[in-house]
Amino acid sequence: MVLPAVGIVGTLVSLELGLRGRRALHPDSQPTFSVVDRLIHALQGLVLLTSPMIVQLPAGVFPYWIASSAFTIVQILMLRRPDIRKMLGIVPPLHLVPTGGSKQQANPGAASDKRLAEREARRVQRRQLRNEKDN
Image (cartoon, rainbow, N blue to C red; front, side, top):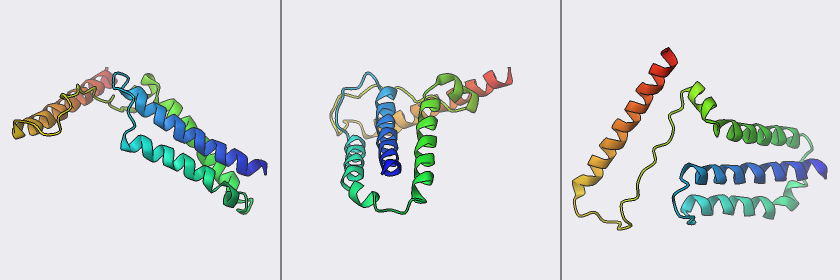
């Protein structure tokens, strides 16, 4: 009974840390329930709903499940640290400014211009990281 409980808790913790990590990337944004947020909460509910069936699984499943959850938790926590992301060459996420809330834009070319600007900003960030690594 202990191994299934540890597996379930590990899964719930990794899902919650992933959700909080998403929100930490965009602290200025309003706390809305996006599709991804709803999906993560649905997965957490599904883990809880299936717990009676999970308890019936063979004991050999749980060491793998617990190790996988532990690795996921460590990975999430490590990748939150800017120094580790920099060491691995992971480009920090772009902080995009919301465009105002309307779903349709008056100028259809503005969306492609915005994408080009975002792409160029990522290129510049990658170049800066490479230069910092070389120095």
